[in-house]
Length: 213
Image (cartoon, rainbow, N blue to C red; front, side, top):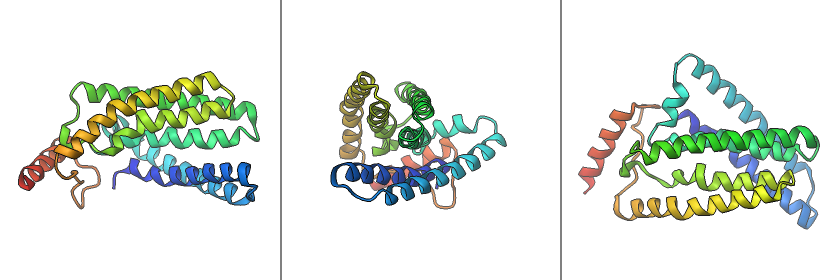
């Protein structure tokens, strides 16, 4: 399992916390499950981030290599996405700090999304490697950024982020749909190799694709 994909766990916990928060404001649900979910997401996110940064310091250009990973590259957006959700929650208790942190994580997400998009449109990925996860940084990412902006009362920025996400949903969503309809089965990472090189992974994926068709 690529290291970046593990950040999907705290993202899911933070998303559940946000859902419970909406239920609490609408249905009067108790607050403690929300705090437990956000607390678990925060702890796991901090641990995974510390481990990832520590390992990255031992390999020069590790994050750039992960970002260019054809299958797991979009998962780089998990890190700032979780930060946006957690800082949005913290803004309820520490408004100035939470707002600044939320804005910083949104800026980090925009940088990651811009790097990924530039890599994609310059031919950095093959059609066989595209999967629904490619919607994460530029579609769901901006939708979450819209939630963050709304939480810190930047409503114009929230509307703009939502519009950007909807635009990318039409563009990237079309590409992903075409890939799923015409490209055969989705490629998988080789068993026993957590982070295969781009060349070996692409060749393996293409060989499997050719055998299936």
